[in-house]
Image (tube, rainbow, N blue to C red; front, side):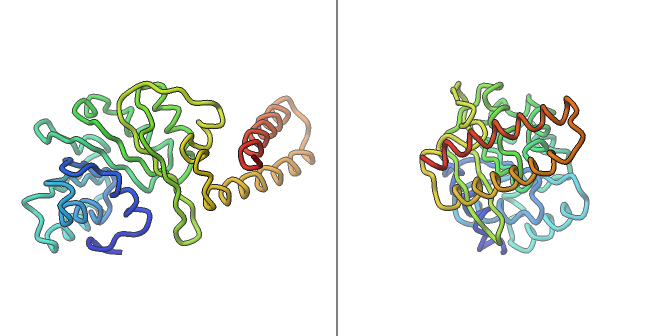
Length: 232
């Protein structure tokens, strides 16, 4: 992967960036995504934010190598603090983190979202918490995607402002992803059900406390939700 040829996962993230949008890529690592967006005329300029010094230095180096210092600003900052007044950011991309961490980044500096019209979020795990956050904060799902890369499965959630309603299954699995029911989607949730059933077996051997019983009940409920979707 490089600034010209992104991974399948990041290429999908890039496909949801509106043409002409000024993008802030939070947790940018080597700044491959901002460089790709600018090189391909999708974004006129971009911000690459990194909280860790090593990746920040890698991003600075990459932007310099690509000759894009005048169009991409790299900042060492915690989450959305990479966005400054006057940047006029339209879209934010956050990819390659757990869902809870992505949500914590969005909640830590909500004022930084004032000018933003689109969020493109790619959680490595727990996409559910992003959908729950979106419901609570009046963001609606514009689109969703699921991709497999290097034997790992990733979900991408694209949000814009506005209310929405989701069922319990749609919060867990994604409304659009349920509608499409792709091969990768079915693979992911078949594997999850198998894993949950293994957990249930181990719980049977544990001391039957109220906590264990509650966990068992929750897992059975999740299995029922998923099986209803994947078997229809």
